Length: 232
Image (cartoon, rainbow, N blue to C red; front, side, top):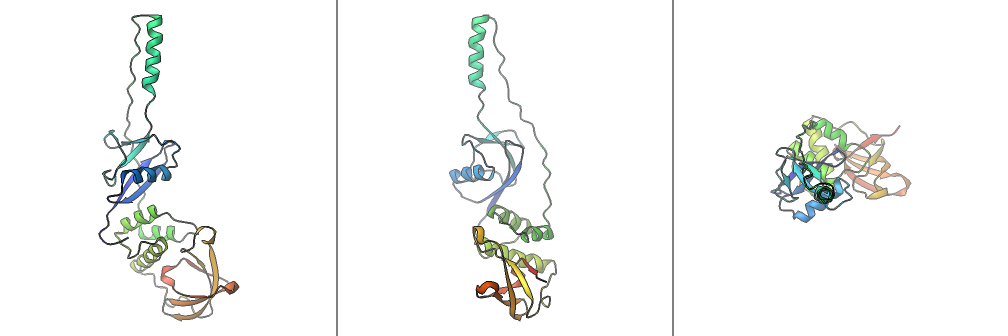
């Protein structure tokens, strides 16, 4: 993330009651935010709006959503149509029979927010799975950390080194030339984002030159950046 770019984060509760953290940069267009919320919450219906869990007030998807607030996904009510049909039947049955309009009740819910410690974030980064940019933005915000790059893999690398240094985790001296390692390749896409095995050919502090198995060549990498495990 570049310096000076503000990231806004809100909590969205989908119709199934599941909670999602959604992040975007300031000045993002409303249509893009709406599309982001739909995709993150896996909504099948485009006709939705948000209701603030703090105030119970409906609000449209836009860049002015208050940072750190919680909203519930709501669909337009079908009550007016049902009410009209009920009134028609009421007139046929009795001139004095008038259905009572139903008022929608908004119930404020308390949502427990998990505490994100540096160690818990490092544990999440060191998992063999893809991580969304929304989560990376959220973790950077929790750490008060700003990466120098915007590429997703580079943000992971910088964040791992930052956390390890802050926790006093020093990989210098942990490995030696000839050690066999496997590295989860963050920079790959799709099916290529997997474990790659290799051997340390040269080592200078935490900068290792790895020769990959299966003739995949060599790479010089900073071990402080990587999710790496030693092979027996």
